[in-house]
Image 1 (tube, rainbow, N blue to C red):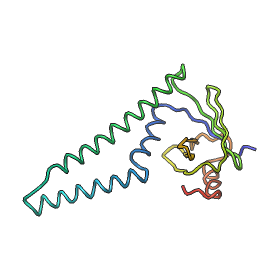
Image 2: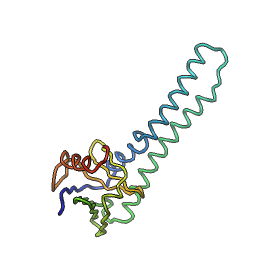
Image 3: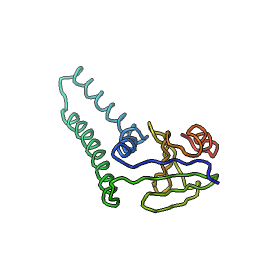
Length: 166
């Protein structure tokens, strides 16, 4: 029996939001930001209290920031191009549903997947989505304001009851 169901379209706004999380808000992204911040702070303190400054660190920091921005923009573009390539409309609608122990994923192209909820290893929220990430890094996405069965807050309670940290 389906307990929760939500539909979303994977378009430019969708990919920007999802990949923004992965590139700038995930744990690894935050760790990188902290390291870059510490390097920048150390360099600035060196500039203030010491006459010998290694300007290479500033170049490295700028390079890291630019590479992250480039990677984010490229990933979004590739994802959008893939959608356009496989869909004549350029956007594909996905319906994702959950039962007590399964996730069902259906696209407007007619593809259908069923997986065990147990293969979900990570759950996180963005501004508009609840994202379930599998062992194989496949994303099953529920749009918060588009539940046709169930509601966002009961779905989050359901996931927490299954042991997922959100």
